[in-house]
Image (cartoon, rainbow over all chains, first blue to last red; front, side, top):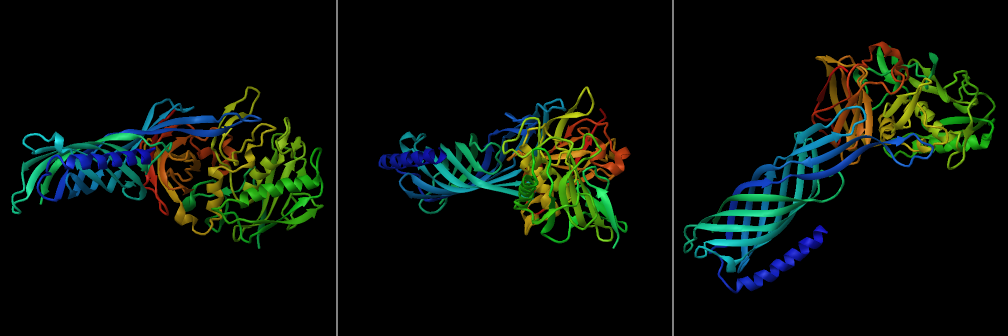
Length: 229
Length: 334
């Protein structure tokens, strides 16, 4: 499902880029380097059960020792981006994000212990990937300094648990958009342009720590500054 | 060579303590000099005999087939290197020191014991020389493929006894309730090495669980098992002091696998080995779902049963080929 959604978005972005590229010029400069803060929303990891084989002649259901409900908490982190404008409004970019969310497991329904009981641990999560953005030049504002954009990316997910002793890997996908605002426009090949970027995306983890194997989207919000050469 | 008999199923052997304390499982052991060593077979495959007599409902040939399947179940564990070889039928009863490891029926005096395993041990090395499995002929037995109501499944009980045969002690991953007429009723268990059998007719213990797999892999590790699995270590304390005899269970968040261990040192320390790498929830409980004698017969009085079930406040990361950061679990009195 995730791959299909990603494919549709990329196709849609390509179509939009062609149309919008003809309507307005992009910000001057091709290379953009940005850094800032990110906030990744939490999300459920799923329910679990500690199952014992029931003592019946023909067990029909397990004897449940206890149940768990696990989730990843929201976390703030940092991110850096490197973007290259290919043509018109279309750019490709690479990104690295680091955050330290807390994994929480709530124990419910233990046959001997009154609940709920909470156990947790912090992990360090890296997302390294690449994608594309399209400036929505038709929606530009403030004499073209403000530029909404949409984008999508895919990358590698790396989670370090237990102070790095345990490493889990997977993939991570982002689909979203945002706005760039040029504080200073790059002038005639001399001073680089400087601006701010805010974005919001749906983020889907595929792999890494999983409990029930289901992929659930989380909201990711970022904000920072960029320079454009 | 010094040799000595011991009864495995009613474990009267020394259970490993000290530096080897509780690595994933209760392992049968002995002391060589002052050093605790696990009971293991030195030469593989282990040759075994089957008695040439059956009981009502089970012929000698069916007995052989059932125990062969049970041996094959343990042999099939990919993370362990243990092997067995059928040497033939034998007229001698099990439990006789004759150099032949024998499995067969025999009337046992203990009214609630379905089967037991006896060992002949080289006390100089701790290696097993002979192990005999005695199935109590006073019980009704079955080898029906789907089980048979009112009769105990021979293959299931054989899988449990062969666990002892290769040196495993009892597991405590199970939940029981006291019966008004005495004894305990098992509500559920997730290890064939749980000391109390399922009801007659149940065949679930023909298959090993994660706890059993970890146990046999710990005793007879195959190839790169130590590199592919990890260990979870920690300490159980009550009022600042180590708790002896606590049952510690590691629950793998991703798979739901349960593997147990025990605190077998007065410091309350434990190590559970042979774990699939991942994030674990750790549960500690008193050893009150079976007779303490069936787990730690030598140190019954030291076992602390007076604390509440407690979960570790942190999730524990078990790395591949390594050991987790130690987790401390503080328990409180009931």
